[in-house]
Image (cartoon, rainbow, N blue to C red):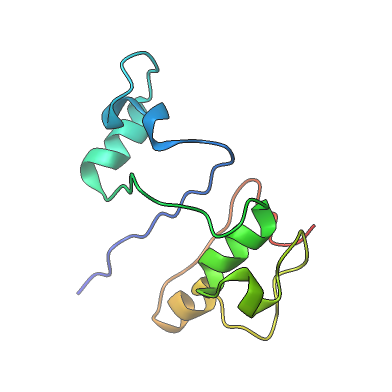
Length: 104
């Protein structure tokens, strides 16, 4: 059985309503619209931290910043298994492209 593809997008300072498929009548976002229609989108998500590195760290470790120790633009803790490591253990190939900022 083929595993489903997982695409996790991180953007800075973007609200859900900046995508046409999610209600914006002005902005044209055909690629994002396709992802919305063929996948899953979340319209009521909130960041655990206003700082980008600790917010990404929380998503990728499953721990809030005060539990992981990543409360500022600090490196992601190496003693916590990440989402990428867990996916690799399940047979997924993981790739990171673009602005990653898991550490300053």
